[in-house]
Length: 79
Image: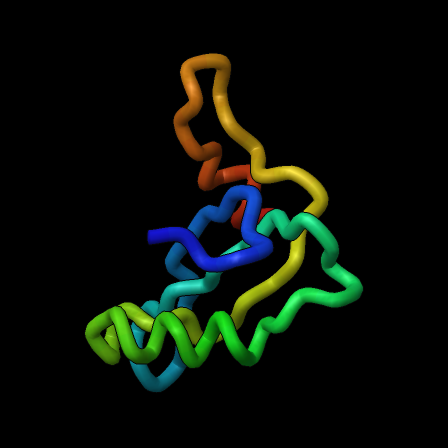
């Protein structure tokens, strides 16, 4: 199922001093000024295992993808 207001998203692993690596979610929103980021975090908390819930949810203009539609994780890691 898809969360309302999300056009696209991509998740990467980011280093964390306590946990090793944590998920960071980048979200391409239909309207980032009125998007409910806390609501999305609550939704993900209900539907994912605790270790998979993103530590951060960040807005992004456009999710970088290759010509075949694959997520360009390295492009997200430099943001």
